[in-house]
Length: 144
Image (cartoon, rainbow, N blue to C red; front, top):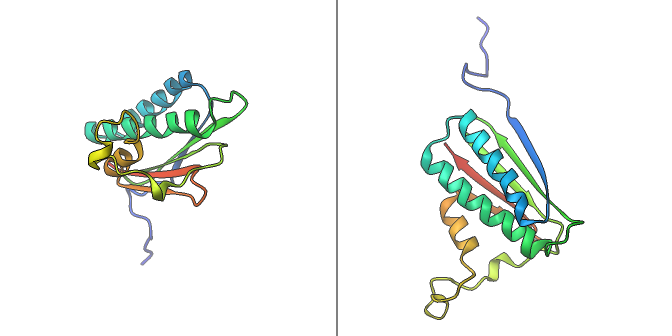
């Protein structure tokens, strides 16, 4: 009897990639990709909303803080879809940042601050959030 290691529902991972200029207007290309992937793989509304929120936040941070709106620098976005899971990787060409020493946005002295909540929100909405050592690349995992 011949058996197969792969079940009938296992498919090879599908890869998507975007190379975005460091301009806030390029966010529309990201949103279009998120919608395309969500439609293609029947991603639920909650996961879709979480992905849209997290990726908008991370990519805007990469454009603004990482690449300092430098039109010569790019933000690279990759998505790997595999067995009811999407892994997004976002990288900028900036120097990175110390993601371990961010101010706590829930601390009394930070509650009225207009900035500083993005990474906190992303860590709560994504199933997994992994920064590289330098802090200029992040990997976000979403199960659907």
